[in-house]
Length: 202
Image 1: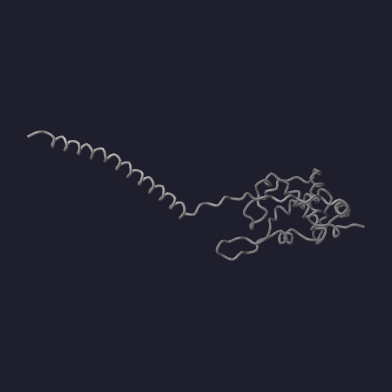
Image 2 (image 1 turned 60 degrees about the horizontal axis):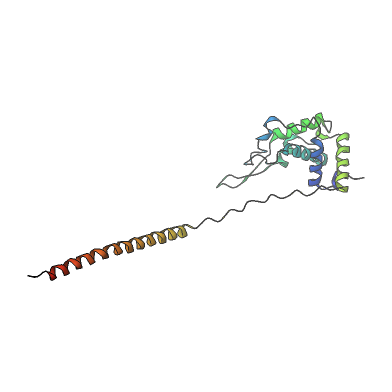
């Protein structure tokens, strides 16, 4: 019999997220479009369906490590926070996201809450095992990687100044040549006047 442990976690979570998307009990809150997943994150998730992926990951985590609570789950989804010049420090993930996810899974009947914590229900166990069996038979297609736009290299500071200085020098030399060309006719006129004076009889 195929179980959760026989399937790849990445493939299983994606498959479970697709199935949870069809259930009315699993709905992202109003603040899911702009909230961060923890204090260690700098930006919200880019994937618009990130809520279903997180709920599927939480369900698998409860299956594997349950029974457990919100505080223990926060450490699973935490990470290092960039503190600038200070050393990075670990911060736990958002407790509100995990709490809402667990509550929705309880309403859907996939998780049970008792004194020891939250653990997967028989219906949730059967649901995950069936999904694992489907993933093992027909694994989903790989997610296409996002291609980053290659930025064009900026010209160096020295090169820009050199090109500008060369242009200025070229303009100056052209201007000087034009001025010299304009002065030559004046000199010729002066020579003509001198010759006329010399030809006049005394």
